[in-house]
Image (cartoon, rainbow over all chains, first blue to last red; front, side, top):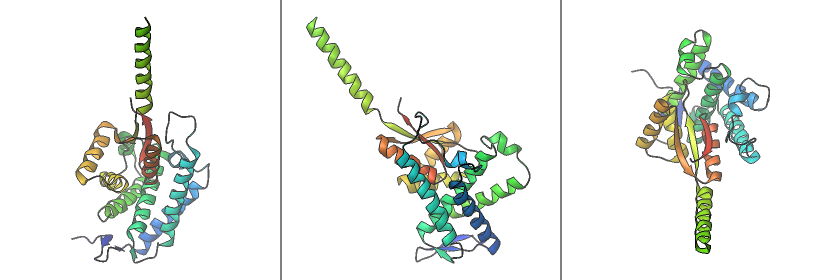
Length: 143
Length: 97
């Protein structure tokens, strides 16, 4: 049986069994989310700043601020816990959210908006996306 | 005539009241790259729904392209929408038809 990348321990913490390369991948992803959140011209902006209520000219500034703050906090928490052997539930949730935000941002930035576009994609971007999907799938088993 | 006018005014009042009470929907949209298991986990953690309801909503998103995952007041709808977006799902709010 293949070993799991994340396992829930008896004490409730989530053990991380990622290789150094795997941790570096997660770290680079979190750094990209943090950078994108602070850069209005970043390619991931369309996904990160998606409308909350498309029927309004502008969204509630407090809601937008809350989203920005939570996205950044999660990415920073990932970076702060990158080398930990085990994560709390909240830390693992921050990893999960940050990876999923990156996944969707990459999809939107590359026009992967339907199954046809995704199925037609080839090359290193597919591998990159599948790595994030695999990490998310593993995390979803313990959250 | 007066009675008829009063009746019309009552109807207008009731219709305005219904309009202001129309709930706001939180909608989640399908995308081709998000794993199904991820969507289920997000629904469970954000709303606290039972696993079966989360799976049902996820399948609705998958097959129909979107699902209304919560309805209620505008402020809470926007708050839930932000939580879903922070968890990486495509979500919007809209007035119930």
